[in-house]
Image 1: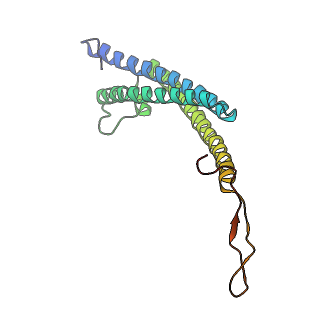
Image 2: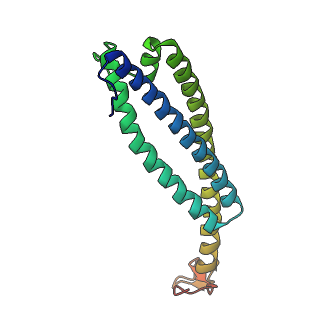
Length: 179
C-alpha cells in the first residue's frame, strides 16, 4: 500500500483515488473476461478446440490477475474503513460509498453498478458455455460408447430345461479396446 503524503487529508484522498483506480482496472479486466467467455462459447459451438483452449488459458490468466488485485483492494477497503470508523465490522464497498467524499462516491457507485452488470452477464455466459460443452461431451461419449460397445441382441440359446436364455449376444465393436 502506498500513501504518498504525510498530510492525513491528502493521504486519505490518495486512498480513495487508489480504490477508484483499482476498481476501474478491475472493471476493465471483468469486461475482457466477458469478451473471452463469449469467444469461448463461440469456439465450443464451432468445435474449434485450439481456439477454445487459447480462450480458456486467457481466462485463467485474468482470473489469477483478478485474485491478486483483490488482495490490494481489500487492504484499501480495510484502511478506509478504519479511517471512517467502520472497523467494528468488515467494511464493504457499499459501506464505504456511504461515507465517501461525493466525487469518489459517485465514481465508485458507477463502477459498482457496472461491475454488477458485467459479472451477471459473465455468470450467465459461463453457465451457457457449460451447457454447450456438456452437451457436446455427451454426444461424443454416446458416439464412443456405440463405437466401442457394439449392439446387444438376444442370443437364442436354450438352457437345460429348454428355456430360452436372453443373454445378450455381443456384436463386434467398430473399434477394439486398443482403438
